[in-house]
Amino acid sequence: MKNTRCPWAKSENDIAYHDTEWGVPSHDDNYIFEMLILEGFQAGLSWNLILNKRENFRKAFDNFDSKKIAKYDETKLAELAKNQGIVRNKLKIAASVKNALAFMEVQKEFGSFDKYIWNFTDNKQIINNWKDISEVPATTELSDKISKDLKKRGFKFVGSTIIYSFLQAIGIIDDHLISCPYKKSAK
Image (tube, rainbow, N blue to C red; front, side):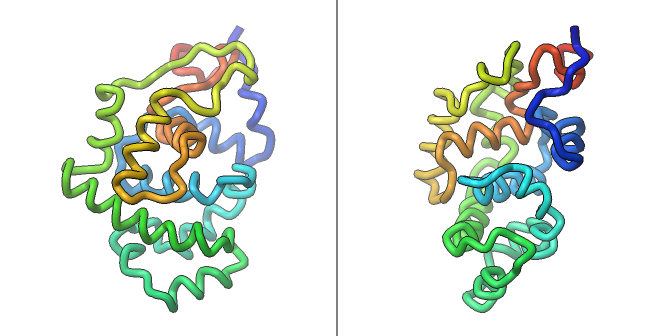
């Protein structure tokens, strides 16, 4: 019976994200970069906190334009560290610059980050059929493999747990519970 939204989606922001983005395949490099950066900022915090600050992040980080972020200097990093509208973790802020540079290198090598990341699954979405939220893993062999490759390419805050969440965010993995009306197989 598909009529119960995934239980983690409780707040207004969670519900909107769950219903329109989570598990929905994306091939837009700007969106993919945004999710990579936001997932890194989420590490150790709640996703709801990140969603609540998402518009502030977009303003502070030039709408997640990797070319602009790659050019951030010490003055800009200091400004971001004082911005109360975002998560003011200096290591995560600095990582966004490193990640922008690494992201652009991947784009150069593969033509787009989209081609790079979706290649790990032969351009196919992984649709899991979980009955209970407790079954959803925090990491998998796939997230381990991608995490290792990203780290080798110079990315920061890309541990396997972060990458698993990232894969859900960009729709490479659909972990909507089978009871959820947003489950891809439900349509």
